Length: 274
Figure (cartoon, rainbow, N blue to C red):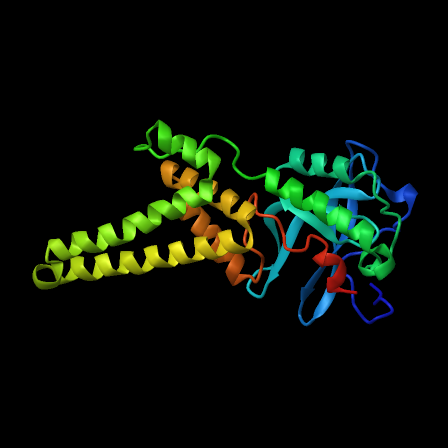
């Protein structure tokens, strides 16, 4: 195995990135992606599924951890063949196939990692970012969101203004909750319940503040997040699974999986090695 010119040693042998090496539709090929571990960028060879865009393929997202080496992270990504940069991640092949079709009309015939970051390509980069962010937002929960106690008026409000409705509920809940634990005199009669109630108040205040901040800086994203929160609160059957997954992702230094939340910069991967 030979080191590249910049001294980076590839993990596996990367194929020639030519038009002839692109996999035919419905056949798996191989694709090089880049992963930073052991204080350097490493080239890793992964399987790839072709899309309608000849320079965009679907690949597994991989990670590296000190205690287990290379591993599949459980999600997929749309990857640029010439640079190995991953544009967007998803758990659904169909979604990434749709994104590849949306991006097909853009010029992907370049091999320089920083190509899209050049000033002369700013218009192209902005159009690509906008397309990816819109697609990511559309991946969010789109069904009706309600809680079991909602009446018709509340259900309509959740559809019309998801974040504002949830924020309003939090602002109503907080003083009512504090009044309730005071009236039951937990401070004098039940120390454990008193401290649990105060803990809930602190967490409730934190959620209220963060939702208000998110709504101030990104109202559309706040609405996506609020819909997801209500849907998860109502179902209640996957909260632990998500926390376990996020904890593992956080521990490994990977971005948390937040379906429906658009990336700040979908082209960040192109700048990582530029």
